[in-house]
Each structure stands twice: as C-alpha cells, then as structure tokens.
Length: 62
Image (tube, rainbow, N blue to C red):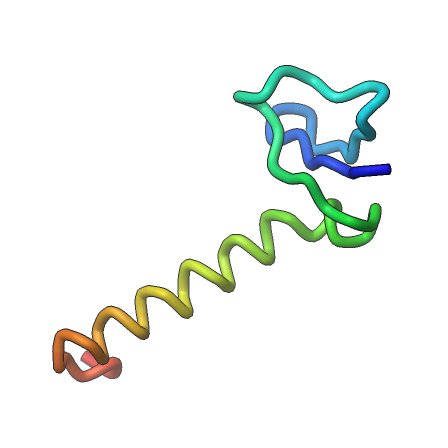
C-alpha cells in the first residue's frame, strides 16, 4: 500500500482515501515517511540549493 501526504488537510492518506493529485505528495512506502513529507521536501530543497551554489562557485555562507 502507498501512503500520501495531503498538504491541504495535513493528514496522511492511503490509496483507498487519497484526495485529488493537486493536494497530495507521494507516494511514500510508509506512513512515517508520508507524515514527514514537508520536512523531507524542505531538507532536499536546502541540499539542492547548496549544491547549486557550489556548482555556480558561490560561497554557501554568503
């Protein structure tokens, strides 16, 4: 079973009760992963931003 995080309701959903695609993030393998979707997305964004700064030769401390 896949798990989804609904950004509108801030609830974890399953394939059986999943809302429309615009409102969900996923799929995730576990309920715990789905419930941490926002934190995971934030961490990935921060990592990608740092990698982009490094690729462009910018100081990450600036």
